[in-house]
Image (tube, rainbow, N blue to C red; front, side):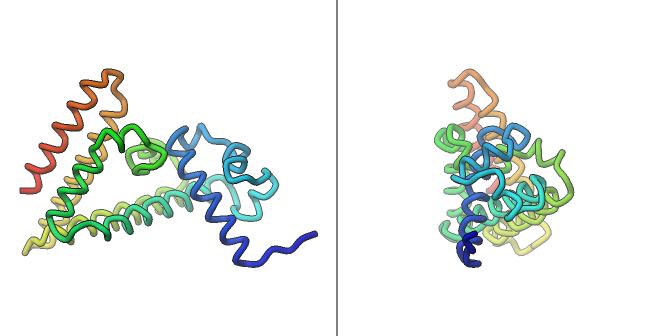
Length: 190
């Protein structure tokens, strides 16, 4: 029996988490079975339990990883409000809407996370707080409480707008929702 190094195991675990994140955002958490997730990672079902205690454990790890990656991405934005304006335009773009597997886990999974076990909910809570903190830090308000409230408002506006646009079958109306969402978010930031 082959023994793998600790580094190999960590790389494999991360590959599972990344592939599962894409699959969850495309097919949903409940729509993604362990066999499909492991196949996506190029592994057998038997390897799953060498990395995770359960599917719930995997979901919690995926949610944490997805949101951590999103927060890290915010660090590459321009400073201040200019970065937030770029974020709004990118987040509410047709490209983001049309490629959920590569996009925000909140817009793709929020309804399912609410029905998950405590580990996934805690991972989501921690990640959402970090996102709100990143947004609030760019608002440069003299009142941190006000900046936090505005950051929560912007975050919820972005996620809800993207979810609504994805749910619409009328492409023109879906684009209109995104355009109006951008206008509303930028007005809200002023």
